[in-house]
Length: 84
Image 1 (cartoon, rainbow, N blue to C red):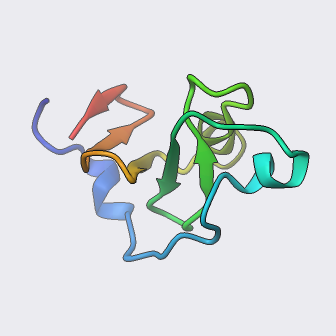
Image 2: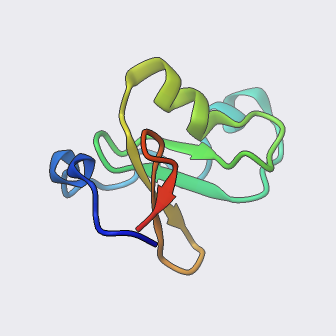
């Protein structure tokens, strides 16, 4: 873990848009764990899941920071590839 990056200053106080991975729920896919975007509240599945929807959300939107949902609380910056 390193010093918090500048991307966390862009994070907002958001609520999850869905209880589970938004795309997996539509596609009826299972997920391993879920992550919430700290810019818009999008909930997507982790990279261990088939859909990798949290990462795809970053790739499509540029929203750089997310946090684990229902896990031990930690945050990730996709740009710096580091935990906070």
